[in-house]
Length: 283
Image (cartoon, rainbow, N blue to C red; front, side, top):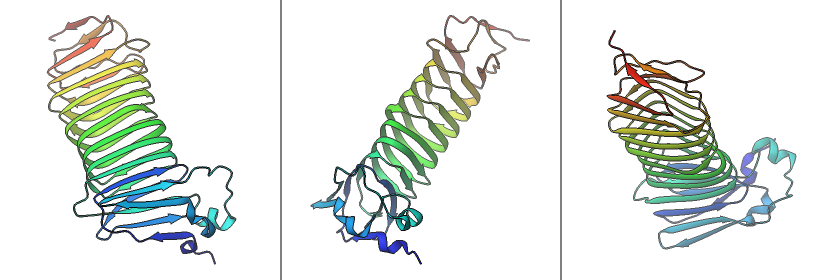
């Protein structure tokens, strides 16, 4: 019988407040527990690929380079799939997690963190059922899924890949720069939002903003519905399927379906920039 414990390399660590991770081709799983722990899943004779260094209250985990070409056994592929690092963060007094994952999936769940910073190459990123004061992420080719999470401040910088945010409460604001990829935000609430999208479609549903929501998109369709906000600014730079004329029927309600562009809001006012005429119809 296969037993995945034969591939588990357990590292004893002292309590730490900061964690820095650098992985080359390994999946990363982040949890939280009363007792911190590190488990690295790989072939038994290959545990030397991981380096751990503890400097005071900062723990550094680094995967050695040159992992290309390594072939795992059938038993490992069946039980584990690929290399995986599982980290249990301490529940008390933890301050910051910084992780760089060049090629691999990242899963963060059921954690409470003051600060989380991710830099990813390729792979899926999932954050769920967590409370994070400040979240930063940059990616070259990663899709982000975030759900059932409370965040004070979110910064998505230089993102290439799709972003899906579902049932997330942003107590402060979101600043996002997405080079290429679709954006989907549903069932969420925030104070301010500033989003710049290069190429990709935008779909927003059941969205409440207490401050300003500003969206700039270059190429792609817009679909917004059931939005509540004092001010919404939508700048369609070029290539969008917004057509003239746009008619506002007695603001704050506006619905215009034209080749994928749909708006239904309870905004105080709606600004749309792309040589679009906005008229008011009271009937």
